[in-house]
Image (cartoon, rainbow, N blue to C red):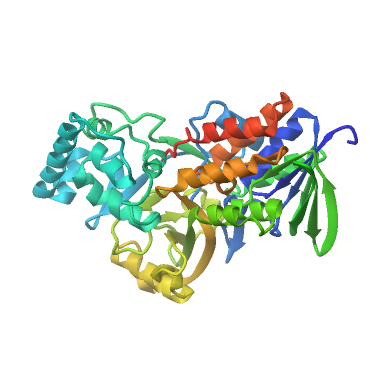
Length: 473
């Protein structure tokens, strides 16, 4: 391997592992992945608890990016289960299946409320005929497209629960997260005059038979078989430079200090951590700018229940604010073999910000409120609840506020000054995306490096590419 180009990858989640996977396929590189935790996979990993294999919230494998699904299916070699997707929205005490049906929606909301939605939609159409500027917020974007009635019913409360005040969110938050082309498409779909497309609705998806963590584990196995190295319980503590390039990475690995030479460095770390490694704490402008990029923390409450099964849907959205959680999923719906036959687990997931009421609650308080919500919705009986497990993950969801574009431009331009540095993944790119997008980033980086493109050029191209990513439910 002495004639191969050494590359160090910081972070062993799907983003970092995908880069290593595709780089090693070229046969040109010596790859070392450095992962802080004892296990790889990050939030796409799985863990075993009380007889269940559990994921860190609901995950699926689906992509509209050409070739990505084929790459994953080939990698997983027959260990994927194909599901016909079922999900729903809980509103006014009822479950609404998706795609929505006009008659079902009218019965749940009542004729007056339903008529109000149609009126607000008509007003939004008329307003679009008038001269107007581009929307300046998530709220303005959604109201223009769907009308204020639909916005206030679903999008406003759900946005508050997941990202915060929609009036100060950048419209990119809506463009990324809401796949429908507009209210016209929504209404036509409700009337069955138009079918939902694969670009807006994943009718089927795939799930790894052994739990979602089998996807990053299979990537790691591939890297090891091709001569790559994965160092867990390891952390970069210093980047050693020569002029504008990083020549090696000093890490602490299982308590020992060692130095890894590198021609290129790829990072999926948070930009604040990466910036601290590149510039130290002396660059106050950079520290202030990268600190302005906001995140929401993730909270997962696993509720263990003495019932074999609870849900009919893979996941259920809860936009109403009376419920603490914004989504509920059941692991055994992905694969019944991932838990004992007589018990099940519901996972309630939601977000919080540092210092807010939700984040300040104790684990017991969070569990109590989630169980109360599930009982109120009629999903479980309190007597069947065994116990709960709470997991918290800080800085999980990028939040696009109105200033994020300017901040990201400044951070990106600063980091581009390091000639052999690249970033990838949701956190490394500060991009709201899914695992299929991380696979695409890894493929893109490996392909462009193998063709001789320089990291600054690749980075610029990749930033343009990730802006086109959309989340498809």
